[in-house]
Length: 339
Image (cartoon, rainbow, N blue to C red; front, side, top):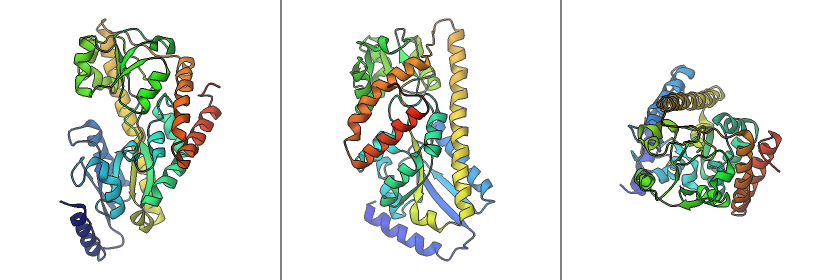
Protein backbone atom coordinates (compact mmCIF):
# COMPACT_ATOMS: atom_id res chain seq x y z
CA UNK A 1 0.00 0.00 0.00
CA UNK A 2 1.40 3.40 -0.96
CA UNK A 3 1.74 6.39 1.34
CA UNK A 4 -0.93 8.15 -0.80
CA UNK A 5 -3.44 5.36 -0.09
CA UNK A 6 -2.56 5.49 3.59
CA UNK A 7 -3.11 9.24 3.64
CA UNK A 8 -6.52 8.86 2.01
CA UNK A 9 -7.42 6.19 4.55
CA UNK A 10 -6.27 8.42 7.40
CA UNK A 11 -8.40 11.29 6.10
CA UNK A 12 -11.43 9.02 5.99
CA UNK A 13 -10.73 7.85 9.52
CA UNK A 14 -10.52 11.43 10.78
CA UNK A 15 -13.85 12.22 9.14
CA UNK A 16 -15.49 9.23 10.81
CA UNK A 17 -13.95 10.05 14.17
CA UNK A 18 -15.28 13.61 14.11
CA UNK A 19 -18.69 12.35 15.17
CA UNK A 20 -17.38 10.52 18.21
CA UNK A 21 -17.96 11.73 21.72
CA UNK A 22 -15.51 14.40 22.92
CA UNK A 23 -15.01 12.31 26.04
CA UNK A 24 -13.65 9.33 24.12
CA UNK A 25 -10.22 9.09 22.49
CA UNK A 26 -8.85 6.06 20.70
CA UNK A 27 -5.23 6.11 19.57
CA UNK A 28 -3.10 3.65 17.63
CA UNK A 29 0.62 3.61 18.51
CA UNK A 30 3.10 1.59 16.46
CA UNK A 31 6.16 0.15 18.15
CA UNK A 32 9.60 -0.42 16.68
CA UNK A 33 9.61 -3.82 18.43
CA UNK A 34 8.14 -7.10 17.10
CA UNK A 35 5.15 -8.72 18.77
CA UNK A 36 7.16 -11.46 20.49
CA UNK A 37 9.72 -9.07 21.95
CA UNK A 38 9.72 -8.51 25.72
CA UNK A 39 9.73 -4.75 25.24
CA UNK A 40 6.59 -4.88 23.09
CA UNK A 41 4.82 -6.98 25.71
CA UNK A 42 5.75 -4.34 28.30
CA UNK A 43 4.49 -1.56 26.02
CA UNK A 44 1.08 -3.21 26.03
CA UNK A 45 1.14 -2.65 29.78
CA UNK A 46 1.54 1.06 29.06
CA UNK A 47 -1.73 0.99 27.12
CA UNK A 48 -3.40 -0.41 30.24
CA UNK A 49 -1.79 2.32 32.35
CA UNK A 50 -3.25 4.99 30.05
CA UNK A 51 -6.69 3.44 30.30
CA UNK A 52 -6.49 3.40 34.09
CA UNK A 53 -5.06 6.91 34.49
CA UNK A 54 -7.60 8.42 32.12
CA UNK A 55 -10.52 6.70 33.81
CA UNK A 56 -11.25 4.83 30.59
CA UNK A 57 -11.45 8.00 28.51
CA UNK A 58 -8.39 7.10 26.42
CA UNK A 59 -7.93 3.74 24.71
CA UNK A 60 -4.53 2.97 23.17
CA UNK A 61 -3.99 0.11 20.74
CA UNK A 62 -0.33 -0.95 20.60
CA UNK A 63 0.79 -2.27 17.22
CA UNK A 64 4.02 -4.20 16.63
CA UNK A 65 6.68 -3.05 14.19
CA UNK A 66 5.75 -2.92 10.46
CA UNK A 67 2.00 -3.28 11.17
CA UNK A 68 1.07 -0.12 9.27
CA UNK A 69 4.35 1.34 8.02
CA UNK A 70 8.06 0.48 8.17
CA UNK A 71 9.98 1.18 11.37
CA UNK A 72 11.70 4.21 9.83
CA UNK A 73 8.47 5.68 8.42
CA UNK A 74 6.53 6.12 11.65
CA UNK A 75 7.52 9.76 12.11
CA UNK A 76 5.89 10.71 8.79
CA UNK A 77 2.95 8.42 9.49
CA UNK A 78 2.29 10.03 12.88
CA UNK A 79 2.53 13.52 11.38
CA UNK A 80 0.06 12.53 8.65
CA UNK A 81 -2.41 10.92 11.07
CA UNK A 82 -1.95 7.45 9.57
CA UNK A 83 -1.09 6.31 13.07
CA UNK A 84 -1.56 8.43 16.17
CA UNK A 85 1.77 7.83 17.87
CA UNK A 86 4.84 5.68 18.15
CA UNK A 87 7.20 3.97 20.60
CA UNK A 88 10.51 4.08 18.76
CA UNK A 89 14.26 4.53 18.86
CA UNK A 90 14.78 8.21 18.12
CA UNK A 91 17.98 7.51 16.18
CA UNK A 92 15.93 6.13 13.26
CA UNK A 93 15.17 9.71 12.25
CA UNK A 94 18.66 11.19 12.44
CA UNK A 95 18.59 11.48 8.64
CA UNK A 96 16.07 14.31 8.98
CA UNK A 97 17.76 16.00 11.92
CA UNK A 98 21.23 14.80 13.00
CA UNK A 99 20.59 16.04 16.53
CA UNK A 100 18.04 13.25 16.98
CA UNK A 101 20.89 10.76 16.58
CA UNK A 102 23.00 12.51 19.21
CA UNK A 103 20.28 12.76 21.84
CA UNK A 104 19.05 9.23 21.05
CA UNK A 105 22.27 7.57 22.19
CA UNK A 106 25.13 9.79 23.35
CA UNK A 107 27.36 6.75 23.84
CA UNK A 108 28.98 6.70 27.27
CA UNK A 109 26.78 9.42 28.76
CA UNK A 110 24.62 7.34 31.05
CA UNK A 111 25.37 4.79 33.78
CA UNK A 112 21.70 4.16 34.59
CA UNK A 113 18.25 4.86 33.14
CA UNK A 114 17.49 7.25 36.01
CA UNK A 115 20.27 9.57 34.87
CA UNK A 116 18.73 9.84 31.42
CA UNK A 117 15.21 10.21 32.81
CA UNK A 118 16.39 13.07 35.05
CA UNK A 119 18.07 14.78 32.10
CA UNK A 120 14.85 14.53 30.11
CA UNK A 121 12.73 15.86 32.99
CA UNK A 122 14.96 18.49 34.60
CA UNK A 123 17.98 18.96 32.36
CA UNK A 124 16.31 20.29 29.24
CA UNK A 125 15.93 16.99 27.37
CA UNK A 126 12.15 17.05 26.82
CA UNK A 127 12.30 20.66 25.68
CA UNK A 128 14.99 19.76 23.14
CA UNK A 129 12.92 16.84 21.88
CA UNK A 130 9.87 19.01 21.28
CA UNK A 131 11.91 21.73 19.62
CA UNK A 132 13.05 19.08 17.15
CA UNK A 133 9.82 17.09 16.78
CA UNK A 134 7.06 19.69 16.80
CA UNK A 135 8.11 21.22 13.44
CA UNK A 136 7.49 17.73 11.99
CA UNK A 137 4.00 17.59 13.50
CA UNK A 138 4.77 15.42 16.55
CA UNK A 139 4.59 16.05 20.28
CA UNK A 140 7.09 14.30 22.55
CA UNK A 141 5.27 12.87 25.57
CA UNK A 142 8.22 11.23 27.30
CA UNK A 143 11.16 8.85 27.14
CA UNK A 144 11.74 5.29 28.16
CA UNK A 145 14.52 2.77 27.62
CA UNK A 146 15.05 -0.98 27.99
CA UNK A 147 18.09 -0.03 30.03
CA UNK A 148 21.85 0.04 29.83
CA UNK A 149 23.35 -2.59 27.57
CA UNK A 150 25.89 -4.91 29.17
CA UNK A 151 29.23 -5.51 27.47
CA UNK A 152 30.35 -8.95 26.33
CA UNK A 153 34.06 -9.76 26.61
CA UNK A 154 36.38 -12.75 26.48
CA UNK A 155 39.10 -10.86 28.38
CA UNK A 156 39.02 -8.97 31.69
CA UNK A 157 37.98 -5.34 31.34
CA UNK A 158 38.21 -3.15 34.42
CA UNK A 159 38.56 0.26 32.82
CA UNK A 160 39.45 2.40 29.84
CA UNK A 161 43.07 1.22 29.62
CA UNK A 162 41.87 -2.34 28.98
CA UNK A 163 40.15 -1.19 25.78
CA UNK A 164 43.49 -0.55 24.05
CA UNK A 165 43.67 -2.71 20.92
CA UNK A 166 40.53 -4.63 21.89
CA UNK A 167 38.82 -6.14 18.83
CA UNK A 168 35.23 -5.18 19.56
CA UNK A 169 32.09 -5.62 17.51
CA UNK A 170 30.45 -2.20 17.29
CA UNK A 171 27.82 -0.92 14.86
CA UNK A 172 28.70 1.93 12.52
CA UNK A 173 28.14 5.43 13.78
CA UNK A 174 28.64 6.91 17.22
CA UNK A 175 29.28 3.60 19.03
CA UNK A 176 32.07 2.67 16.63
CA UNK A 177 33.64 6.14 16.69
CA UNK A 178 33.67 6.29 20.49
CA UNK A 179 35.33 2.89 20.85
CA UNK A 180 37.94 3.85 18.26
CA UNK A 181 38.63 7.07 20.18
CA UNK A 182 39.10 4.99 23.34
CA UNK A 183 41.82 2.95 21.62
CA UNK A 184 39.81 -0.14 20.71
CA UNK A 185 39.74 -1.71 17.24
CA UNK A 186 36.05 -1.72 16.22
CA UNK A 187 34.76 -4.38 13.83
CA UNK A 188 31.48 -3.91 11.97
CA UNK A 189 29.51 -7.17 12.21
CA UNK A 190 25.78 -7.98 12.14
CA UNK A 191 24.31 -9.24 15.39
CA UNK A 192 23.80 -12.68 13.85
CA UNK A 193 27.58 -13.13 13.64
CA UNK A 194 28.52 -12.08 17.17
CA UNK A 195 28.48 -15.58 18.73
CA UNK A 196 30.55 -17.28 16.02
CA UNK A 197 32.96 -14.33 15.78
CA UNK A 198 33.62 -14.46 19.52
CA UNK A 199 33.94 -18.23 19.40
CA UNK A 200 36.48 -18.14 16.55
CA UNK A 201 38.48 -15.24 17.96
CA UNK A 202 37.57 -12.79 15.21
CA UNK A 203 36.60 -10.38 18.00
CA UNK A 204 37.44 -10.18 21.71
CA UNK A 205 34.30 -8.34 22.82
CA UNK A 206 30.98 -7.03 21.59
CA UNK A 207 28.49 -4.24 21.98
CA UNK A 208 25.33 -6.32 21.82
CA UNK A 209 22.41 -6.31 24.26
CA UNK A 210 21.26 -6.41 27.88
CA UNK A 211 22.83 -8.94 30.24
CA UNK A 212 19.80 -11.23 30.38
CA UNK A 213 19.53 -11.33 26.58
CA UNK A 214 23.25 -12.02 26.23
CA UNK A 215 22.96 -14.80 28.80
CA UNK A 216 19.91 -16.32 27.12
CA UNK A 217 21.79 -16.44 23.82
CA UNK A 218 24.73 -18.26 25.37
CA UNK A 219 27.27 -15.49 24.84
CA UNK A 220 28.67 -15.85 28.35
CA UNK A 221 29.55 -19.47 27.63
CA UNK A 222 32.36 -18.22 25.39
CA UNK A 223 32.82 -14.65 26.65
CA UNK A 224 33.20 -15.06 30.38
CA UNK A 225 34.18 -11.50 31.39
CA UNK A 226 31.07 -9.35 30.88
CA UNK A 227 30.91 -5.77 32.12
CA UNK A 228 27.71 -5.23 34.09
CA UNK A 229 26.14 -2.75 34.52
CA UNK A 230 27.33 -1.56 31.13
CA UNK A 231 29.16 1.68 30.49
CA UNK A 232 28.48 2.53 26.88
CA UNK A 233 25.11 2.24 25.14
CA UNK A 234 21.56 3.00 26.24
CA UNK A 235 18.97 3.92 23.61
CA UNK A 236 16.36 6.61 24.11
CA UNK A 237 12.96 5.25 23.19
CA UNK A 238 10.60 8.14 22.52
CA UNK A 239 6.87 8.09 23.07
CA UNK A 240 5.42 10.71 20.75
CA UNK A 241 2.10 11.39 19.10
CA UNK A 242 0.45 13.58 16.50
CA UNK A 243 0.70 17.17 17.73
CA UNK A 244 -2.78 18.19 16.59
CA UNK A 245 -4.27 15.18 18.39
CA UNK A 246 -2.23 16.05 21.49
CA UNK A 247 -3.31 19.68 21.41
CA UNK A 248 -6.95 18.58 21.14
CA UNK A 249 -6.77 16.66 24.42
CA UNK A 250 -7.96 18.43 27.56
CA UNK A 251 -5.21 19.29 30.02
CA UNK A 252 -6.12 16.56 32.50
CA UNK A 253 -5.79 13.88 29.82
CA UNK A 254 -2.50 15.33 28.63
CA UNK A 255 -1.32 15.05 32.23
CA UNK A 256 -2.57 11.45 32.43
CA UNK A 257 -0.63 10.56 29.27
CA UNK A 258 2.53 12.25 30.54
CA UNK A 259 2.32 10.54 33.94
CA UNK A 260 1.67 7.18 32.32
CA UNK A 261 4.87 7.41 30.24
CA UNK A 262 6.90 8.49 33.26
CA UNK A 263 5.61 5.57 35.31
CA UNK A 264 6.01 3.14 32.42
CA UNK A 265 9.65 4.18 31.97
CA UNK A 266 10.38 3.17 35.56
CA UNK A 267 8.39 -0.04 35.16
CA UNK A 268 10.18 -1.07 31.96
CA UNK A 269 13.70 -0.23 33.10
CA UNK A 270 13.18 -1.89 36.49
CA UNK A 271 11.71 -5.03 34.92
CA UNK A 272 14.68 -5.38 32.56
CA UNK A 273 17.14 -4.61 35.38
CA UNK A 274 15.58 -7.29 37.59
CA UNK A 275 15.88 -9.78 34.75
CA UNK A 276 19.50 -8.76 34.23
CA UNK A 277 20.37 -9.04 37.93
CA UNK A 278 18.81 -12.49 38.15
CA UNK A 279 20.75 -13.60 35.07
CA UNK A 280 23.96 -12.11 36.47
CA UNK A 281 23.55 -13.94 39.78
CA UNK A 282 22.96 -17.19 37.94
CA UNK A 283 25.99 -16.63 35.69
CA UNK A 284 28.30 -15.85 38.61
CA UNK A 285 26.98 -18.80 40.61
CA UNK A 286 28.07 -21.08 37.79
CA UNK A 287 31.69 -20.30 38.66
CA UNK A 288 32.50 -19.84 34.99
CA UNK A 289 31.71 -16.13 34.61
CA UNK A 290 33.48 -13.13 36.18
CA UNK A 291 31.45 -9.93 36.11
CA UNK A 292 33.32 -6.62 35.95
CA UNK A 293 31.66 -3.45 37.27
CA UNK A 294 33.53 -0.31 36.29
CA UNK A 295 34.16 2.31 38.96
CA UNK A 296 32.60 5.77 38.70
CA UNK A 297 36.07 7.12 37.84
CA UNK A 298 36.51 4.75 34.89
CA UNK A 299 33.00 5.50 33.65
CA UNK A 300 33.79 9.23 33.80
CA UNK A 301 37.00 8.63 31.83
CA UNK A 302 35.10 6.82 29.10
CA UNK A 303 32.50 9.60 29.12
CA UNK A 304 35.27 12.14 28.65
CA UNK A 305 36.56 10.25 25.61
CA UNK A 306 33.04 9.96 24.24
CA UNK A 307 32.66 13.71 24.59
CA UNK A 308 35.22 14.25 21.82
CA UNK A 309 32.90 12.37 19.47
CA UNK A 310 29.79 14.19 20.70
CA UNK A 311 31.64 17.42 19.97
CA UNK A 312 32.26 16.33 16.39
CA UNK A 313 28.61 15.34 16.03
CA UNK A 314 27.58 18.76 17.34
CA UNK A 315 28.82 20.41 14.15
CA UNK A 316 26.19 18.59 12.05
CA UNK A 317 23.41 21.15 12.69
CA UNK A 318 22.43 24.03 15.00
CA UNK A 319 20.14 21.64 16.89
CA UNK A 320 23.02 19.20 17.33
CA UNK A 321 25.11 21.94 18.90
CA UNK A 322 22.26 22.77 21.26
CA UNK A 323 21.92 19.10 22.26
CA UNK A 324 25.66 18.91 22.90
CA UNK A 325 25.69 22.10 24.97
CA UNK A 326 22.66 21.08 27.03
CA UNK A 327 23.89 17.53 27.59
CA UNK A 328 27.41 18.45 28.65
CA UNK A 329 26.13 21.23 30.94
CA UNK A 330 23.89 18.69 32.68
CA UNK A 331 26.64 16.10 33.03
CA UNK A 332 29.06 18.67 34.44
CA UNK A 333 26.45 19.95 36.90
CA UNK A 334 25.90 16.38 38.13
CA UNK A 335 29.64 15.65 38.39
CA UNK A 336 29.43 12.94 35.73
CA UNK A 337 31.93 14.41 33.28
CA UNK A 338 35.68 14.79 33.64
CA UNK A 339 37.22 18.04 32.55
